[in-house]
Length: 63
Image (tube, rainbow, N blue to C red; front, side):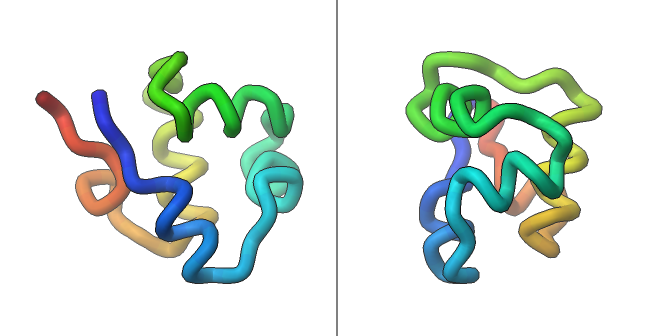
């Protein structure tokens, strides 16, 4: 599953650490998801989308 977290996060001037804090995840987890090394759980995917003020379909691209 691809995502555009990094682009959306940078557009919002948000660090990985801040996004991780908002999602109650580690910065390393956010980094791995951004770099397509890890697919988030459904719960975490919704938290990330909510923190970025987007719908889940706007953040994650199912291939």
